[in-house]
Length: 148
Image (cartoon, rainbow, N blue to C red):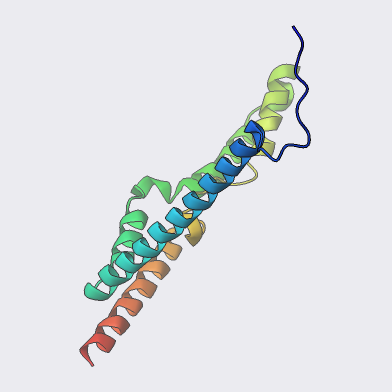
């Protein structure tokens, strides 16, 4: 059997060209659809936010912030005591392997543990109060503007 040489003078698109063109068309249509959906979602969110005195955004933020259990907040202080407790052990009298592990614990616990709340930063009681105060101020300002 003789293999037929590809005709280089032909203007027929190859299967590779067809596949690439199809992928490009698919990506373009997908991008257009995503833009339409995001525009519609933004429009719906704006309508909900303007119709509701409290605002959907305020409710979402408040729900996310208050979802932290109360034991999360003192976590930073408790994590700082780990290095103190490890240092107060007799690690210098322990065998080499255990002393190495304890030194590693001391080094690792120098950076306190903390919980981050998305774009709001590290959560603490002070920061929690600041967010609530700001959200309440925004809500009252919006209510005053809506009444006028």
